[in-house]
Amino acid sequence: MTMPPRAVPVADRALLVELGDAVAPEVQAQVWALDRALRGDPVPGQVELVPAMVNLLVIFDPLVTDHAAVAAAVLARLASLPEVPQDATPREVLVCYDPPHAPDLAAVAAQTGLTEEAVIAAHLAGEFRVAMYGFAPGYAYLTGLPEPIRLPRKTAPLRAVPAGSVIIAGGQCLVTTLTMPTGWWIIGRSPTRILTGAEAHPFLFDVGDRVRFRRIPASELEQGA
Amino acid sequence: MTRAVLRVTAAGPLCSVQDGGRAGFLRFGVPASGAMDRAALALANHGLGNPPGAAAVEVSLGGLTLEVEEGALSIAIAGGGFLLDRGSTRLGSWQVVTLREGDRLAVRRGPWGAWSVMAFAGRLIAPDWLGSRATHALSGLGGGAVTKGQRLVVEDSRLLPERPIACPVWARPRGEVAVVIGPQDRFFGSDRIDLLLGTTFHLTDAYDRMGVRLRGPSLAPQSALAIPSEPVLRGSIQVAGDGVPVVLLADHQTTGGYPKIATLVGSELDGFAQLRPHAAVAFRAVSPEQAVGMARLRAAALARLLER
Image (cartoon, helix red, strand yellow):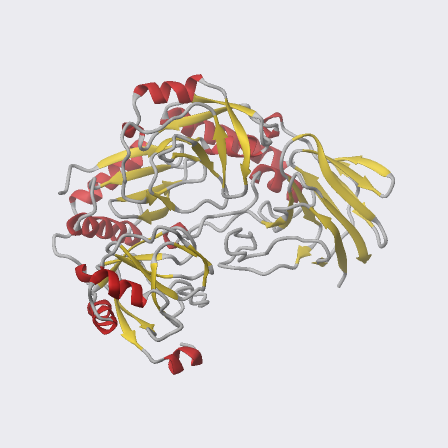
């Protein structure tokens, strides 16, 4: 459900523009549309935008503007957003589901009552969107995990899960960028770098992008992306 | 071209290369990082004629000891009331100090403060990530941790007259901190807000560059809720289901699923960072308008010091 937008002051330097209370596709579409509009044509004093699941943080420079001015400008922009959803950039992420790169694949199959190949097929059929980044640099939360392979997190996190792991939990999927603990299910490994190292475009995705996975054999994973 | 090489002979935990921060990448999960006390960084750099956000070494309560292996240079120390020994000579912190080949310098905790900044007359050589040398603790990306045995190389090293750096009164630790209530105050009863504002809390040892847990009465939200993960700022006071408030600091995660009862005003962050574990802190609510006024006053005060 969409609700009347709220612009809540945060400290001396930001407004949290809240577009919904619960995650829903129409709320996300509105977050992305507002993000895009403000990036293309910043309001005076705008410093940084942080889109999330149901809201957008607008950080501003308190030396040149204030909450009231930014709220008025942002809410006016919200009222004039295009009705038609805008095109999203498609991205492809490579994934290898072969052992030893998919340590939880068998467990996901067992818990969902599917074969391992059916789990893989469901994941490959997923049409994901980049909902937000968070947790750590380049951790892009992808929504759109197909229903049949949705599982709650594991009860205990696994330590030192390698960077590039393709992990799932709930309706989300994520490709890790750091070696970190995770309680999500590890169903594959990707050579695709989210932290691209490219100066002009240091992160592979932007919020709102469409993502599909493409299967590769272990031999291709070991060669790198 | 001149250069100086400093060997790190001892380093406490959490010593790292920091600069003015890596702004603009929160949307990609990357906090700004940068010095815990940003005014101290600016003043130390200014003492040497450097740009205010130039890369420097941030010294934690664990201290840092160096030996000059090669060359000579001036450094500036600001932030916290740390103690400085050059060989057997005791020097104050908040000053420009000359180091020559063979000199040994120890920076250690003093009567007050939790973080100090050591800036260099010259260019500190350190890895850059996304246009900044600030170290992001979780990933180690950026300039990197400063550890025992490491060599710090400063190119174009220069010598300047030794002199004190003025320590503004607002650089002292801040036991009463201004906050703006929210943005998720609606999940907390008014009794919880009253507790936040009416109780003295204490910092705990669960303190690093990502954040610090506080000790005090439980501020548990009214209902156990799973709010959708949303953006947070440096200075957000996040309350998990256990009721324990955590103040998020320079290397904070960029989003979080716990409600934020209040957020520190930006001009309070440096003074808050100078509180040590176990120090007492009280929170005082100001309106968003007052918070903007505080930001402007502080920026003007710092600008006056940087014009000198």
